[in-house]
Image 1: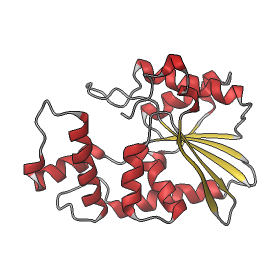
Image 2: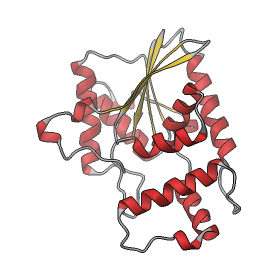
Image 3: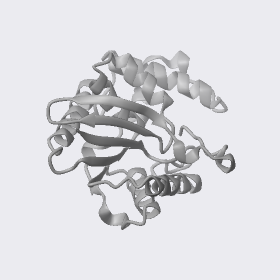
Length: 226
């Protein structure tokens, strides 16, 4: 069977004016992952990433860590993240009592995000959105099917995407309820690896959310979620 390595982008610039770029730590996380792949002698027949800046920068740093050309990845916008800011905004307009204060902790934000995503998954958000849950589900499903059709020519594929798209893909592989996607999305660590075996007929879940490249005494503070 073929193998699909799903990697969530490295730490982005959360809390700044432009989230869609890697932080300094994010660049290091991604290069460490590439060095780990090199150490494990893992070669990829195909490298795919979403079209967001944080996807491209993560893929480039991974390839650099492997000693490969950073330009070797193929871009597929079908693996882009959903617009979480729009979803949260519509949710808070509908449920203004849940709006957190400006100095709220990341835990409070996570709770609001979880509630917003669950409401989105249940198709109960009433305002205009760039993408409904069903549209997102179909987009990721089609992208996953496209990868399955490549199994004859690509035995090992590296996919760099975002937490939501990866969680949706894994939910479909597992045939799990929508709530599973929400749960996995909020657990995924930056630059983490999830793993699937596949052929043109089926996909089989193998591993979730591993960060072996960060399992080092000098990198104890390098595990991040945003």
